[in-house]
Image (tube, rainbow, N blue to C red; front, side, top):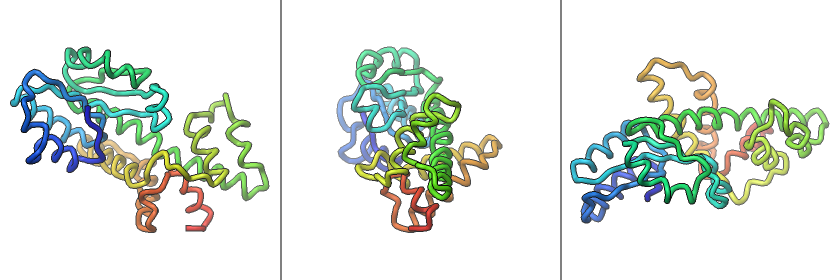
Length: 229
């Protein structure tokens, strides 16, 4: 099992001078939880297959809380028999382990996830700032909206963090979100799909990075909108 931050790190772990491919890997199976470009996942799977090793691209959603509780949603790409072989182990970490198609399909699914979440974080920041500016108790907003159409885990977790200006410990990083949205933009360009919301959100994460906040939690978006960054 492997989880690294980007394609470069994955390449090194898999095919570097001390990488996995240097060991006896025939008939073994790699489950990669990293979030990388779908094309890279397909390329890595092909290269490992030539060496006799199977690979599943299995990015996860749920963050640190989901990992700690074993409730991650894991989306998988690869051969069905490989996914079923890994299922008994992976289900210790997840509430769902879903086969989405061939190699790379897990990564495309994660990009869809990141389009939704990455676009939602700035919207949550806007709502918190509006409540604050209008004299409403922003800290009560997540509870007030709980169970309604606006409710979501990001609202309950990140909305609360934004209202409380509680950014530690970080539950994510702006630069990682930007990386995922840039990968989504590349796939969208390949297939001619417009991503107006995700592209706008990406610019906000890029701005945070330019201000030295790339490693910070996405909840700091509320500070950006309040003019404090």
